[in-house]
Image 1 (cartoon, protein in one colour):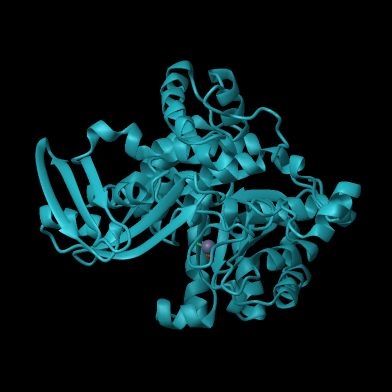
Image 2 (tube, rainbow, N blue to C red):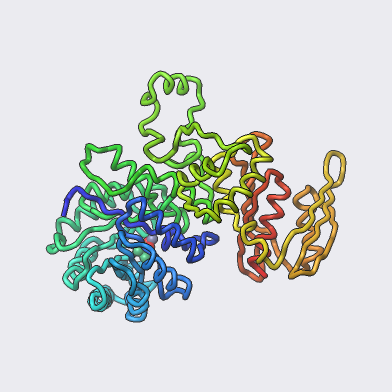
Length: 501
Ligand code: KIV
Ligand code: ZN
C-alpha cells in the first residue's frame, strides 16, 4: 500500500442525503454515483439499506451501475441490518459493509443503556458477522470525538482483531478542536497494537465549522481515508466537504499526500448535487462558491490582472470553472448547449438534448446570456419535466400590484383534471397569490420557510425559490424558478403541494 495515498470515501448519498429536503430518487442517485466515479472517489457510501425499501433499492442499483469504486452500505451493529446490507450489495463488484456502534460514555449510557464491556462485545460480534459476507468491513466508533481514548483504542484493537479492514473515528457531533482530533488519531496510531492491519478513516461533522480542519489534522497524524460529501452537505451543519480536502492536499503538495480525485470535475459535480438536492451553495463557499474566484476590490482586481497568483492560490480551471469563451444566448445551438452541460457533469442523449434545448430556448428568450447557474436550474427543474404527471397544475396566474394599489391575485389550478379559480388580496403579490391558492385548497397548510435568491444580480435575472410548508405536522419542500419572482414563488408552492397530495 502506498503510504502517501489518501483514500476518498464519499457519503453524499448517505450522510448527505439524510438532510431534510435533500432526498433523491434512485435514478438521481445513480447519476450522482456515476459522476462520483468519474471524479475518482475510492468508495461510495450508497445508503443504509435497512432504513427503507428506497434506500435498499438505491444500493442495489448503484452497485449495478458503478464498477470502479468500492460500494459501501451502512448498518448498525446487529444481524438484521448486516443481512440487509449484504443482500443490497449482492451486485457490487467491490463491496464493503460499514457497521458500528457508539463509543462515547454518553452514547453507551444514554443511547444504549449499556456498559463499555457489553458495547465492545457487540462491536466485535458485528464485525465478525459482517466478515461472513464480505472481505472488506469498515467499523465506525460513533461519537469517537467525545470518547475516552484508552477505551476507544481497546475497541479499535478488538474490531481489527475481529476482521475490520478500515476503522472509522467519527467526530459525530463536530465537537473536537483540530489539535484534539489529530492527537486522538495519533493516540490510536501509537496505542493500537494491530493498527498496521487496517486503515484509519476520519469522518468529521461541521457543527463548529471545523470539519475540514479536523479531517486534515487526522490525515497529518496517520489517517489515510477521508469521509466527505460534495459541497459539505450533511446533517445539521454538514460533513467535511470533499472539494476542500481534495484541493488542500493538492495545493499543499509539501505534505506529500495524494488522492485519486480529478479536480477538474469538482465544479461540475458540485453544481449537479446542489441542483438535484435543491441545496444552494453559499456564495462564499471555499472552492465552489459563486464568489470563490471573484475579485471585487480595485486593489485585488489590479493585482490579479498583473499576475493571477497575487490573489489566487488556486487556478479556477483546476476545479473545472472555465474562463469559457462559448457564451450561451438564444442564438446558440445544441452543440454549444451540450458543451456546457457536459462540462457541468450532465450527460444527455440526443432525445434528452432536444427536450432540454427547447426549454433552454424559452429561458434564453427571457435573458441575454445563460449562465452555469441558469443551466443548473434548467436541469434541476423537475416541475416542468414531469409536469404532466402532477396532480396539481397552475394554469393561470394574474397579479395586480403597485403603489398605492392593494395587491390582488387570481389563480386557476387544475386538480386531477378539474379546473378551479379563485382571487384574493394580500400584503404583497406573493401573499395574495398564496391566499388565492388557499381559497381553492381549503386544507390547513402553513408556509414555514421561504427563500428567494437571484442567480447573479441584474433586473433580468432568474430567481429561484425554496419553500418549506407544514401540513399535518410534516414538512414538505418545494422549488420553483422563473424570471418573474411571483411565478417562481407560486411554482415552488405548487411543487410543495404536489408533494403533499
Ligand atoms: O457521524 C457519524 O458518526 C456517522 C456514522 C454512522 C459513521 O455518520
Ligand atoms: Zn456522519
